[in-house]
Image 1 (cartoon, rainbow, N blue to C red):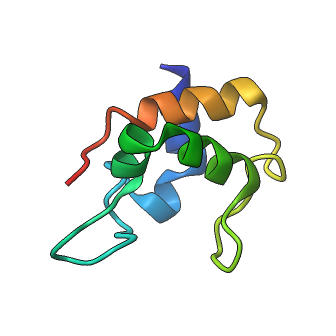
Image 2: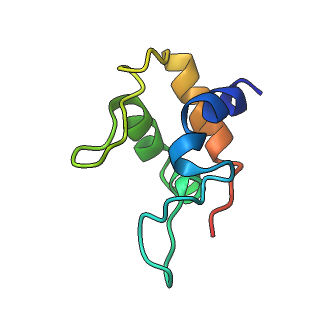
Length: 83
């Protein structure tokens, strides 16, 4: 529940409620927040904590997210659609 609340407050604006607003790959081979969180949880943790260089994703640390917030939002992201 906590991860969902953090996601809805912090991430929905760019990634959408289902995490599919941004496709990180192609239409033929989509990759969404849920895809990354489920298949590469360490990448999710790193991106949420530190942001993504070259992309306008804010670092969770800069937004005041705690380690618990980051872990919970990534756990919630694992429940989002992967395709």
